Image 1 (cartoon, one colour):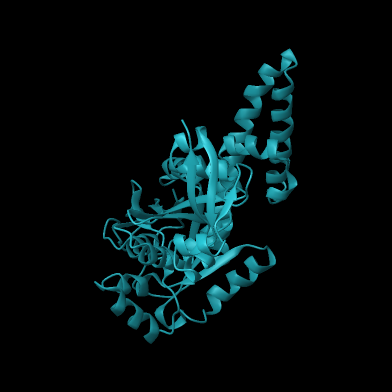
Image 2: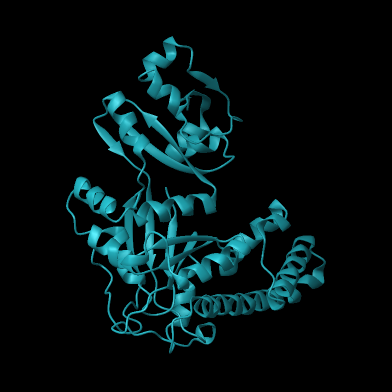
Amino acid sequence: MGFKCGIVGLPNVGKSTLFNALTESNKAEAANYPFATIEPNTGRVPVPDKRLKKLSNISGSKTTIPTYMDFVDIAGLVKGASVGEGLGNKFLAHIREMDVIAHVVRCFENSNVTHISSSINPIKDVETIETELKLADIETLQTKFNNLQNKAKGGDKEIKSQLSLINSLLERLNEGRAINFKDWSNEQLKMMNDLSLMTHKPMLYVCNVDEQSITSGNNFSNLLQEKNHKENKKTVLVSAAVESQIAQFDNTKDKLEFLNELKLKETTLKKVINSGYNLLDLITFFASKPKETRAWTVTKNTKVLKAAGKIHSDFEKGFIRAETISYDDFVHFKGETGCREAGKLRQEGKDYIVQDGDIFNFLFNV
C-alpha cells in the first residue's frame, strides 16, 4: 500500500499532462479547453526505491515487488465550485477520497494555452482553490453540527465532544486560520479524519513551469515558493511539458541522459512521491528472500505488530517475534546469512517501532 494522490488545480494548468507523465500513459485528455477531464483518471505506479533492487540482487530473488501509489487526475476547479459551479460537486467528492493533494499551479506564460483568468497569477489561483475547499468544508461542518445538535439533548458525552470540536473547526475556517495537526489530541484527530475535511488533508504545491525555468524557477514560481516558505508549506518545481517528453523514452538509460542534459537529478515522479511520503510521515520496510523481495509502506511510529498485519492478518494474529535487519547491515554483510553470522540480526517483540529500511522475517503461530 502506498497512498492516493489527487492532482487538482484550475482548468488548463497542466494537470492531465502531468498525470500522463507521472503514470507514463495517455489516459488523461490533455486539451486546451476547460473541463477536458470530467471523470477522474486513475493510474497506479510503482514507488521508485533503489534499495529494493539492491536487496533483490543480494538475495537472488526470483520476483521483486515494489509498493505502489495511485495518482488521480481530478476535474479542474473554478470559482463557485463549492456551490456546484463547473463540475464542483463531483470534484469535491473525489478530493475527499484522497490521502494527499498535489495542487498544480500554472507558472508559465504561453499564448497558445488558454487560462481561466486574464493573466497568470499563481497566488490568486491558489487562493481560488483554497477558498472553494474551505467553503465546502464549512458547509459540511455546519450540516454535521446541526444534525448532532438534535441528538445532543440526551447528554451523550461523545456527541458533546464532537460538537465542541466541530464548533472550533468552524471558528478557525471562518476566521481564515489554518487547521494545524499539532493543535489537536489523538482522539480529536480521529474524529477529524472521519469528517474527511479537504482543508485537513496534506497539500503539495506543484509549480508547473516552462522548460527554461525547470532548474531555478521563474518570477511566478518564486512568488508561490516565498509564500509557501513563510507558511511552512511544501512546494516542488516541475515542468509537465518536460516530463511528458521523458515519458516517451522506452528505457531508463535514455531517460537519465535526457535528465542530465537538463541538469535535473530526479524525475517529477520521484519528487512528488518523496514529498508525499514526507507530508504523510510514511516509511518503507522490506522482506527479502530468494523467492521474493517486496516493499510495504506504513506510517512512522508504527509498531511491528501492525506492520506484520500489512503482509497478512495471520502474521499479526499469531505474532511471536520479528527477525529484524537494518538495510545498511543487510547490504554491508551481503544478506541474511552474513547478518546472522555478524550478530546483526535482532529479535524484536510486538512493541518494536518500525524504522525506515527495516528488513523483517515474521515468526508467527496460528
